[in-house]
Amino acid sequence: MISNKILQRLQQKLSPGQIQLMKLLQLPAFALEQRIKEEIEKNPTLEEDDSEQGDNISEQTDNQEEDNSSDDVFGDMEMFPNDDEIVSYKNNDNHDKLDKNQLFVSETTFYEDLIAQLQLKPLNEKQKLIGLELIGNIDEAGYLSRSISSMVDDFLFRHNIEVTEKEIEEVLSVIQSFDPTGVGARNLQECLLIQLQKQQQNKDIQLANKVLKHYFEYFKKKQYNVILQRLEVTQEDLQKAIDEIIKLNPKPGNSLSSNTNQTISIIPDFIVWQQNSKVEFQVNKVGFRPLRTNKYYEDLLKDTLKSNSPSDKETANFLKEKLESANIFIDSINKRNDTLYLIMKAIITYQYDYFLNGDIQKLRPMRLVDIADKVDMDVSTISRVVSNKYAQTHFGIYKLKDFFSNFMLNEKGEQVSTDKIKYELVRAIDSEDKTKPLTDEELASILKEKGLPIARRTISKYREGLEIPVARLRKSVL
Image (spheres, rainbow, N blue to C red):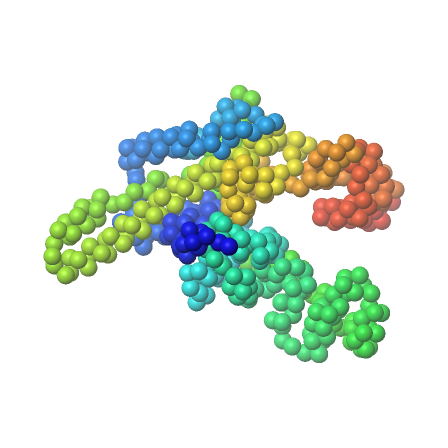
């Protein structure tokens, strides 16, 4: 039984500040800059603090927060370097570290496009919150990476909100109507079926739908004879249906960048460099200054509150609402920066040897849950921060997700990063005799000799992921 105290907490709604923070955490630096400009334009009580005093206050606040938070979060990290080995900056005291020559252009972000489509739908506040949570758990291929039941638990224990699976399913069906077609699917079968449902229905499409819906496993294994017998159709009709399926996009999330002409300059969210054999970093705040509420409107509110005039009361309510909104936005921006700071510090601490020189062999196995445990945050929060964020390092610009990798156990029972395995695989292929290229079985044997017992099918999977062709296509005459 759930206690009355817990039930009362469940009935509480998310505060405007919590909702604001969830949205801001999702935004990368370039989108945040635009979001701040939009907020200033629509709220006259909010403005940039261009005074020297504002800069000093911001710097003092950041330093205090850094001192107070680091010990709690990183109190006991075995096998990790001490905190003083990382010199971190939360203010942009090192603008010269930003290499503008490394900034590059990327197309409109996948997640920004989904959020924009969500805002256009006639959903209530709770449904939009569910929608943001769903989008935050969609991977770059376009698939929902978290189960519905797990998300119910997330809302219950993290947001103190009771949400049913049915409510999440209803909002998910809305997201599955978004472009690119097939986004939000939970697996490949659902992804392909969603795409077929949006096509103009004809005999071939209808047969393709039956194949995917009822005989998907046979289709994957190319057991077409079984499908022919079960459906009692001609080989020609089945081939037409298969041709329709082959036209579908198995990774709809990757299609957005190839179907748009909109481009946005990517500004790194973090700047990481090495100095005096130590790794240093900062949250990048280039593009905007600290924010504050406009003193004129603050004084005006005080004056109007003293009046008994109905018109002044209306003005006072308007000003009070705008000033409260401004303060919530300022607080959310500060909390966003603090959250990004803590998470990036955890990532660098976890991957400290790698960040010293960028040697891929030093990249440790690291999952979202590993960082979530270190900063005492939910995995979905880490996912929201990592998505679409970039770090400029002294060895190049990388997506934050590039610093994460799964692992396997080697023959000694030690964890080995999958990136390490891929690195060894590429090395083996690069050094092979091109007149007699190595088969996947031979590559598996080579990696086994290096203490990495990888199955042939896993080698094939990694090779395909690296876009390396099979042995016969790598063969050279000379």
